[in-house]
Length: 336
Image 1 (cartoon, rainbow, N blue to C red):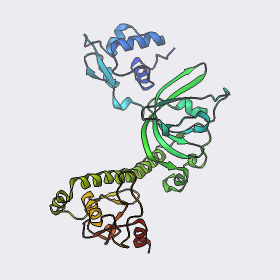
Image 2 (image 1 turned 90 degrees about the vertical axis):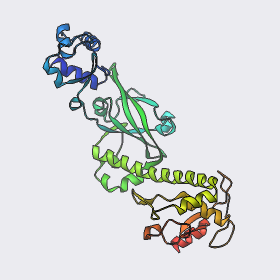
Image 3 (image 1 turned 135 degrees about the horizontal axis):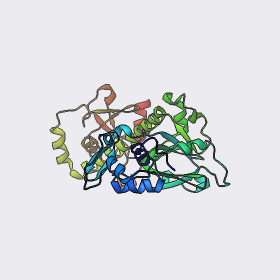
Image 4 (image 1 turned 60 degrees about the vertical axis):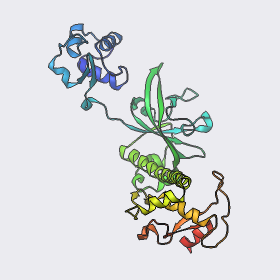
């Protein structure tokens, strides 16, 4: 039986946070909740806490817990909501033949506090403390040894002394955050989980969770930026030289904008790249040899566009300040 002494409003807030009552809250849901949990509240008391769709008989104290969002519908005030906690989930893909990295966003997986031998897992307290809405970093053990996805707890229940927790994948990443990188991150130097993450579920400090998510975003931003630039270059090539030159001549800003991540990433103009590649016509403009191979994706000669005066030194992102070079010459001009 649920304790009633702390007040019906408190018990309703707790029930929503734990997922027993799904918002919006209604009078009928409150009535069913009280009956299900043996709470001795009269219908009159329930109507004072939350009126039904035809009444407006609130006690002024209902505003301590709820706000009305529609006729007979309510939600918990933000100040009464539980702040999410943060966890680290170890995933042994070899044992389960399953991993968050190979399933779509929205996929769910259930874990319990008991292992296959029905013995209690390490850090069993984490299974007791974790709640619906908590955020989780999915770490794959074995050969991967990396954080591969972000998950959220979407369900939790107990049955015959076994605690079941459902994790749902909410974020996907193309570049994973591997253990070697985690170990050299200064902001994680005092994170015990990085040093020793034995067990299935471990609780993370908010600052450590935020640092890892920030690093994942930075790593994947650079990849996404590169992929997006390639898409824009293909579009620019399809537009033709005349259209590109019109856009280039109409530009008023020649110094590209920057995005600061781990390093500075320049948002380069696709028309400049396309025009330089057309000018080169498949021949390296430094060694004068044909491109070393053909791109499998579109059948074009593989050359890289290099800025003569580097962008980091204030060079302009222009056709005149760029040449198309083969990979060997590109490495030579950068590394000597």
